[in-house]
Image (tube, rainbow over all chains, first blue to last red; front, side, top):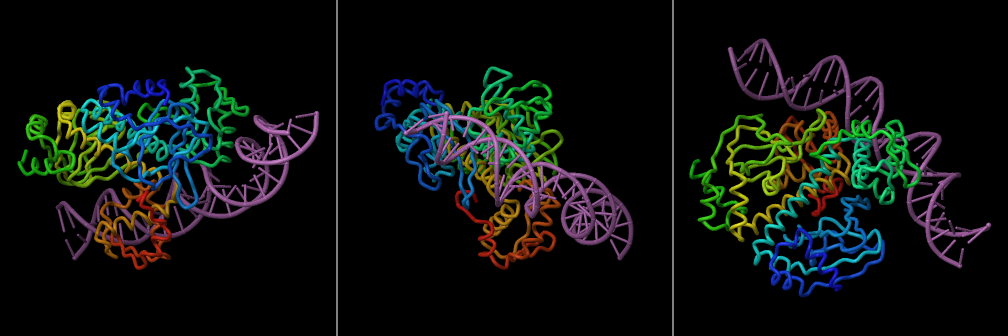
Length: 228
Length: 228
DNA sequence: AGGGGGAATTGACGCAGGTCAAATCGGGGG
DNA sequence: CCCCCGATTTGACCTGCGTCAATTCCCCCT
C-alpha cells in the first residue's frame, strides 16, 4: 500500500484519534486494491470480511431485489463504507460497485473489531461515524417519504450547487440514470422533471446545470436542515 | 424511578455489559416519567438532551415537513431511542409521540456520552446498538425504494404473523392509519390494498387478520432476509 | 471524419396510488 | 342501551410517475 494511502486513512475522522500502536496493528493485514470502473466489489447477502475505505475514485452503494435495483448512496473519497456490517459481523444489506476506476483499502473486519474493543478512543470515533451514517440514511428516507420526485430533485440540485460553493452553474457529477435511481425515480421521469423545473429557473444542457433563481427553487424544494 | 425499571434497563443489550459503577454514575440523574397517549415528547429540530428508554407503552417516531408527516418507526418496550442524536449532540431528525400511555426513562445525554467514553465495554455495545438501528433503517429504505405498496403490505403482514409465532390469525397491533403511514401510503390505499390481498389469502375483519395461504403471500411479498 | 453504442430524451399510454367527499363502522362515555 | 365522534371504508376521479418504444444525442474509437 502507498504510504500516501496510509496517511490519508489515518487522517480520517474515523481513525484520527486511535493510538498509533492500535492503528498499526489494525492495518497490519490491510491492503490497497485498484478496481476498474463498473466492477462490483461487494455483493449483498455475503458476509462482511473487510472494512472498505475509498481512497480514490467513486463508489455506488445499491440494493437489489427481484431483478430491480436502487442506488442507496454515492461515495466520494476519502470515506469508509460498510462499517455497520463489519461491526455486527453480519451479511451486507447493500452491494457496492465502482463508478470510476477506484483505489480501495481493505481492512480485515476481525482486525477492526479487535481494534475498537481494545481502544476506547477509536470506539468513540466508530460510534460517531455510525451515528453519522444512520442520520444520513434517516434524511434519505425522510426525503423519500415526505417529498415528491420534483421536490427531491430540486433539493438535490441545490445540494450540488452548495457543494460547488453555491455556484449558479455546475456539472452533474454522475450519469443521470444514477441520479434518478438515487432519487427513487426512473431516468425518464428525471428527464421530464428537469424540464419541468425550467419554470423554477433551472436550465440544463447535457450535464451542465444553471440555476437562475435559487430562492424560487429553494421554496419549491422546501429546503430543511433536518433533511438536506 | 421504580427499581423494576432500573433492572429492566440494566438488562438491555445496550447496558448489560457496562460496569456497575459506570451504570450507576450514568443513571444518577436519570428519572422515569409517565406520559399519556398521544403526547409528543420529542420535537424534531430540538437538541437531544436525553436518551430515552421506553419501559412500558408504545412510541411512534415520525418526521414532519411542510405540514405532512410520516411514521418512521414504531417502538415497543423495552428499547432505547434517539441514541444517534445523543451521541452526536445534534438536533433530532425525528419527532416522537406516545401511542398509548407510556413510561419512559430519561438519561441525560451528557451522562451517556461520559459513560461510553469511560467504559470500553459500553462503547462496544453502543456501537452494536447503533449498527442495528442503521441496518434497520436501511431495510426500511430498501423496502420503500424497491417494493410496491402491496408488496410492502404483504411483507408487513408476514412479519406480524411471525411476531405472533407464525399464527395464521392475529390482530393488527396499531391503528390502520399508523400502519399506512409507516408503509408510506395513505389510509385509503391501505384499505384497498388489504382488500386486494384477499386474492392471496388475506382476510380482514376490523383489526383481525387471517392468512390462509402463507406461501402465496410470501411469494407476492418476495420475502428477503436482507430486507425483512 | 465516420460510425457504433450506450445514455438521454421524447411521445403515447397505462396504472398505482393520491385526493376529496360521502357513507359506514365501532368503541367508549353517559 | 344509545349516542357521538373519530377511524375506516367506499366511490369517483385525478395525476404523478412508470413502462414501452422510438428517436436523438453524445462520446469514444478507429
